[in-house]
Image 1 (cartoon, rainbow, N blue to C red):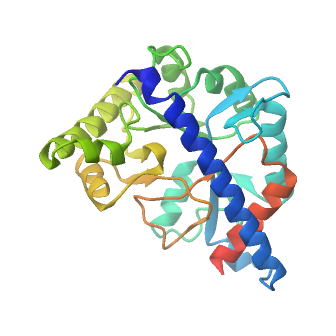
Image 2: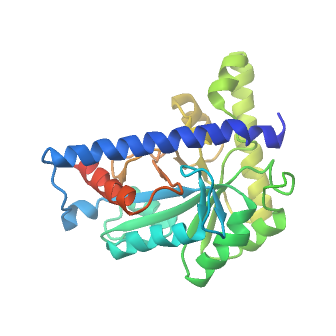
Length: 285
């Protein structure tokens, strides 16, 4: 499979579907609020969950053709982050959340938010990073190495190395060429499929560690697809934490190999963000 095929129409269709699912989930949570679910989060409640956001691509301009696109304009990106900070959230490094997840009581502020960005699109380096750097905001990047310095839309290895030098940036794996594991399982014999998964996980980790000079122990599941077999193989290949897509907060009970993230889109403005906070609270309750 070519790099462009691996991240073209299929990925675009997935993120559009995920965005619509997120909107539906948040709308249902808002409906639950109208039925009597409390909206106020106590200090104790908010100290025991965290929101993780996932972005994909950015543009300088205001106009984005597809409103539920994962291409987010910088004005919208800034507006989304301002909404969270205005509501008492502080953007923290992923490492702080993982320390908290393993049992530390004091590693997070009362309201914590984590930024992640998947795929390695050039706009992350060229458009989003200058703002993140200027404002000292931490971010975790999940990259699939087959695209880097290969696909026209992707960053180069030089970009990756520059980002990895910053203490604001963590780099994780998005598997080697962003495979759809459900599709691969269906078309391969069991033994071949298992070898394929091992190879994808190992090649990605080795490539990223060689480029960054740092251990790579976190991964984001392509298309949000995972199961117990994939989790087991990932652990065998040296990964300690894995992230998916899901409209819910992280709690102390979250599976460390299936940590949910909110998929962020261009059309998630103030009303959408308010529903997100309500949904997080009702899920916690």
